[in-house]
Length: 112
Image (cartoon, rainbow, N blue to C red; front, side):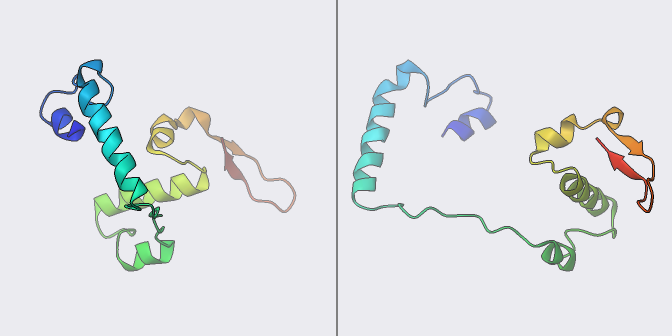
């Protein structure tokens, strides 16, 4: 319901937070407690991650078009810089990166 309000131009209406919806909130809370006591939806569903191999074989990653190439770059940048969220991706700037010169047998590398 909250998503419907948000998508239809009413983002200021917060049915789960606004005190004017207290009766609805209490009814929903009571029903959730009742259903939980009956054992409804006690199993936590855990998302299963896709392997990188699966993403390549299903052509989610690759270079066959511009969108897929961009998605592939986002995955590689996220993995190599240990970025965990879209927010961290958006905050990453070129000014945060530097090239560390080669030392001994090591190759030069990018650091941030």
